[in-house]
Image (cartoon, rainbow over all chains, first blue to last red; front, side, top):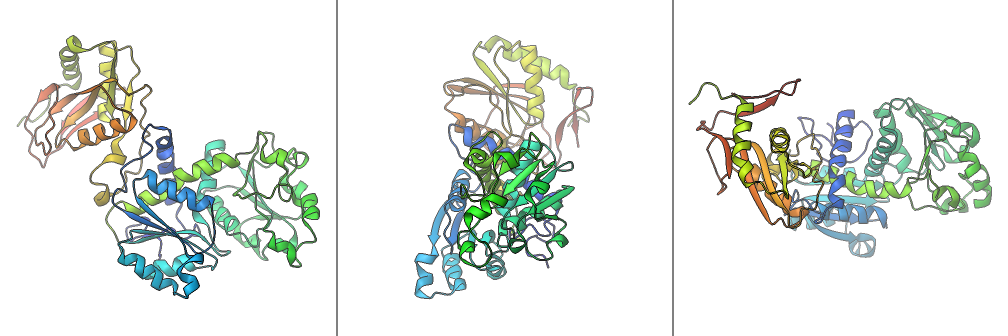
Amino acid sequence: MNLQLTEDGRLRHLLTLDGLPRAIVTQILDTAESFMDVGEREVKKVPLLRGKSIFNLFFEPSTRTRTTFEIAAKRLSADVVNLNIATSSQTKGEAILDTVDNLAAMHADMFIVRHAQSGAAHFIARHVAPHISVVNAGDGRHAHPTQGLLDMFTIRRYKGAFHNLTVAIVGDVLHSRVARSQIHALTTLGVPEVRVIGPKTLLPTGVEQMGVKVFHDMEAGLRGCDVIIMLRLQNERMKGALLPSAQEYFKFFGLTPEKLALAKPDAIVMHPGPMNRGVEIASEVADGPQSVILPQVTYGIAVRMAVMAMLAGGPSA
Amino acid sequence: MPASLPDANTLIARLADAIAPTLTPDTFIVGIHTGGAWVAERLHALLGCKQPLGVLDISFYRDDFSRIGLHPQVKPSNLPFELEGGTILLVDDVLHSGRTVRAAMNELFDYGRPASIRLAVLVDRGGRELPIRPDFVGLTVDIPDHQNVNLSRLDDGHLTLSIA
């Protein structure tokens, strides 16, 4: 059984982009497009989710993702409650499903879940009552579907289509739920060439089976690219044996103006944030004319509105 | 009940004649997507309106969203003027329950507070469920609830009305 879709093929939960049909992905992007102008109006709200209660369940800290989910929910007129659970009941040892049951008893309609454990959102989705939807806002190393979708939305806005693109994902693919979601979305949407670029220690073994080309030499990997997606290098990776140092990493895999010049002249540069300037990306590139990093954040609101509206509308499964 | 409806273009011309004497130069014509937008486009030309034409897609304001969900292709509303204090002529093709017009007025108010809104419809088919009445009507006709009145546009841009 597909946990994400209803029997008649509508979106029930959004947990992963792995296996999500192309028609649904495209529908989310199209719906997001129609939400784009809501942010420009006198009253930045539409009444679609009036009376619905949305709970942001963040078991792991996040600023951007939580804030954009909150803004998106508020622009749809929903009531939003933010729970940073790392600092509340989890420290008292309350089990995750008890937390969920308590919030369901407060008449929650939707849970937005971020958790350090892979599969946490699936676990909650399996447990909740039929009228409640779950959105995965990042689970461990597994998936971050709304980030993947907003990246596709950004690419479509700047490049118009997917069928003629070469897209490179650069950096710590091994630990990145964002990269996994991006790869699934890019292949679903028919991008003919998806490349992953990084040192052997930061690429998962067998990543080729996801339909990507592997490069360990960044300069070779960037040649002819239309889209370059930089991943955040988590500082804690430096402490292990995976990397010698941040300076060394920047030298080989940091995106500098010189390396960017190897891609197509109209290539765009993306980053899911938060950036480590001078580690995976040079400030000249991050703030340069080819960077679309801040538009990504803006588009994230419209994309999250689209996901929430599609989940909340229509008869419950 | 009529087996067929009059020619849509004749009705639009009739509607334009009714509106013309009351149309002020500062009136903004706004059509409701899709049929109302076609009618609004014709009226805009026939009346020689100098203000830009607006289009509303009321999908985000429908009152049956929680029952039927979101329409798959919502076109962004386009109101290329300052609505605050404006004089609005709202245009739809078929007036039935009045719920579309209710949704359209709610949406208009999210762009600002208009000075006035008047309503022009091509066909008033009866069956109102809300206290809404048009200011200008091309044709008034009683159609049973189980039937639909549709305005469609052919490839050559010709508009036709049909009952199904």
